[in-house]
Length: 365
Picture 1 (cartoon, rainbow, N blue to C red):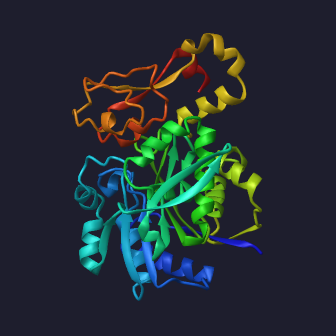
Picture 2: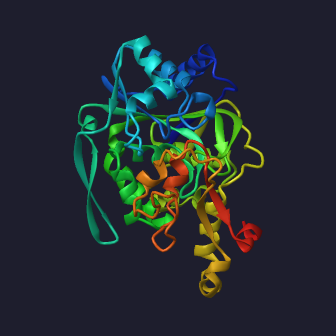
């Protein structure tokens, strides 16, 4: 059985255009089972306005609500920065206006069920929003790069189903980028049957130092499929990245059968000169090629987060999010504690957390 993935060209967020594209694209999939209760899960990484390109654009969410308007729909998420009011997220991201327009509820993920997963012979009980018991997920990620997973798309967006601070704590348990991807795969496998559709907002995407401080670029695509892993596979092709070089896709292929993919919809071209995050290139080099060489001279080859005091607004989001408490209240890093998860980098609203590279790291990445 082939997995159908629809690629649609769409170069702006005019809501009539986006709805037309989504209407045609979803119909091409010929969905057999549309649930009566739908939970829309956007990428709501940060409380930023849509034009910043960090979160799923509200015109995509609005168009999906119009398409599935005869169903019971809610919008839900749980940003990692639990110290910031969820209402500020709804407002800044543009979802509050949507909820008022269509009279649908916005839900913060709090009450939890637990899923049990096993990784490297250890068992973990992972909290997940209890809404998943009654609702099926309409997964609506943003097409962006990510410092640990190369790309943040359908599979990574599901990490947001884990409520609040637990997401950052898990980074302290799965420090290595490969192990973190292994966790994502095992978590995804547990909830795969609750995801009925994935729609990637790739109209304006982010490359380079994503998922929050990268460079915005008009990719001009919407990508749609039933299963996130296949959607992500095709997004890799769009970005000119071999899917097998993306850890979570490689791991999934090793553990599960992968069906043949049929790409339908508009003819597409690869995104030219797509820029990867420098942190990901560093981990790739360190883990695959230079580990023996780097080991004795590790100080000469490093990529670390650093706070630009001129940009910093003292919001302390970085301090609050750090899973190992490596940032003090005077905004200094304890380098012995820092696990290079770059959670601080992700949540900073002001791009004050920067990627600092040694000379050799700059040369090699």
